[in-house]
Figure 1 (cartoon, helix red, strand yellow):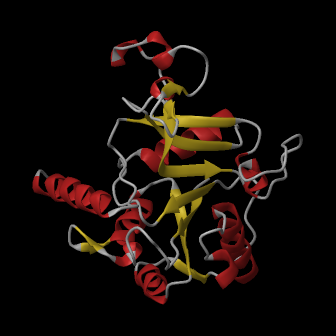
Figure 2 (cartoon, helix red, strand yellow):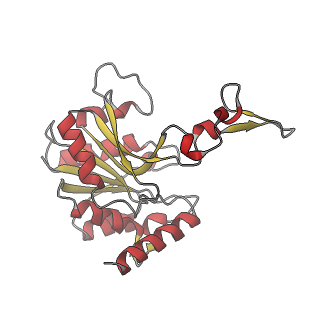
Length: 245
């Protein structure tokens, strides 16, 4: 069954004001995410959720269902799962109820760079494994948790955890694999999103359910815009990609 994609993007941003509609490689940033959803064979319906009328207009012009997000779900402290649930509930009230088997894909409007097959890979793992959620990850590279340290006011360095600084490892290739969410995609069931999975403790990540899985992207394959440097990187990547098509 094709997924319903919920693209989230609020108007406020401290790092890059108006980043969701800021031009990146000749297009509004969010349009890259909308096009990624439209080009995925695993997505059947697209919702754009925002408090920004410009982003809602962009979504509607691209054939998406525009859902106006209320102010309390568009603050710095608002959680993405609350915004996603609001979008789904609004869609169901106006259009149709979702089937329990219909996957939901959460995409961030400020991620213009992601692998072309990423959405499909996440939905495929979700449906074939029967898990509750799938999130995309990237290797942490040199920013590995084993190399994290504490520095006190006097400048004294100590391990973040344990007694041995850097866990005794000095070569990057000797570090055990470690991964961090990269913001590329979240695929999940409706039951997981609405926190209906038995045995899951309440909390900000409860909507991932109990059986949580991941797909791995190469380092740098996803660019999540949170700073002006990210904006420059995304622009360069997309222009280079378009030049080699």
